[in-house]
Image (cartoon, rainbow, N blue to C red):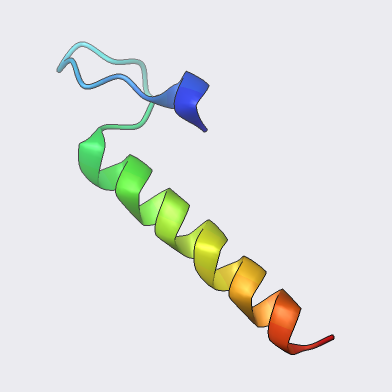
Length: 39
């Protein structure tokens, strides 16, 4: 995910800004937590 991070306003469509990166990391953490609880 870090490779997709670009804080500049001229980022490509597929790149993430600060907020998008934060949201993606949070989703990943939540998924990992759920997976761990389901084992």
